[in-house]
Amino acid sequence: MKSHTEYLKIKTKDRIEFINITEQVEKVVEKSKIKEGIVLVNPMHITASVYINDAESGLIEDYKEWLHKLVPDKDYKHNLTGEDNAFSHLMRTIMGRETVIAVTKGKLDFGTWEQIYYAEFDGQRQKRVLVKVLGE
Amino acid sequence: MKSHTEYLKIKTKDRIEFINITEQVEKVVEKSKIKEGIVLVNPMHITASVYINDAESGLIEDYKEWLHKLVPDKDYKHNLTGEDNAFSHLMRTIMGRETVIAVTKGKLDFGTWEQIYYAEFDGQRQKRVLVKVLGE
Amino acid sequence: MKSHTEYLKIKTKDRIEFINITEQVEKVVEKSKIKEGIVLVNPMHITASVYINDAESGLIEDYKEWLHKLVPDKDYKHNLTGEDNAFSHLMRTIMGRETVIAVTKGKLDFGTWEQIYYAEFDGQRQKRVLVKVLGE
Image 1: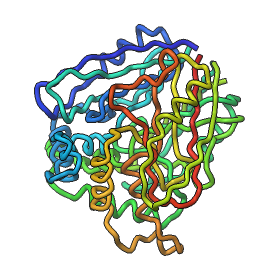
Image 2: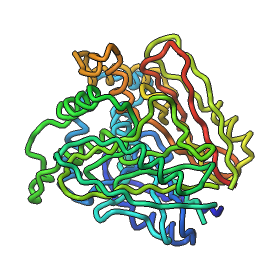
Image 3: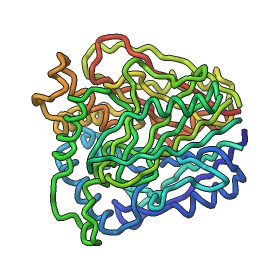
Image 4: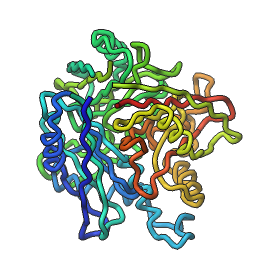
């Protein structure tokens, strides 16, 4: 079994921001030379998500508005620690932490519309995304 | 390391429909002859989910009703593209995309009640589910 | 490829309870002697979750309160079977089933604040958590 690990660096302009990282992950898979296996992609932070869905700007606006409905502004207990990012932890919970993607014949084994997104909920500082390819 | 990949084909009668695919995944694991490893199961579409929970018809009705509460009908921006399936993308987000299941001694390493479901939120046309077994 | 599988046993005092299992998973990874690979961690039950987030007691209280908002008390159809745990299935759906974590140089490849939690939503009886390490 071969493995190949890289860490992408991401710094968003806005506190909440969604970034398409499909091409970056594709490049890591290519460099790994792994033909059959999986790739694990996850933020190394607990206020961000990696998820798979559409590269469509309207949907991304819908996500942001919907997450604000599901995670309303309120006095969260976490914020008594001096933080103000309880909402970021909860939004990341809805969107998930990691994704595991099949690698087949050296490529991401994706349907037509599958794209990999990094969703940041507490940005404006440097974050890391782990990409680990495993297989043969 | 060995790998074995198959693509299940699913066409639902209803737009929203939940289908138990446990037996189909078990058959792929058996055919793979892999004894120790994992199996990744995911839709290749962005308006469907693969998740693990109970094979109980009441719970499935509860899921459908609950998802409609969490994802109310409204004028989503995604639908300005001509689509009418923004709700399908959001419901799939709640239910998740993929599942990763342990394979031990050649079988799905499941607790008593674990069953694999395909949840369709924009059906009535043919969809594919990727099943990839990795291990030895 | 090597693999190593263990089953943690957990019995919570309360019906809903969150337990940090990071150290237990680290010990399994160490025992596996696997240096590069992944570890899959999941409950073998359908009313519990394994997720990654902060080891901060205020946030855990926020999670519990927020989940009660997203999954209100009501007459769920699942409970017509004689069960009273429909809410537990739905809360587990929000928090997810499993997590997949990279193992790099023999350690969990984690960011500073990542911790592994077992979230129980129907406890007070013995449950099992599967930990499977795969790699080389």
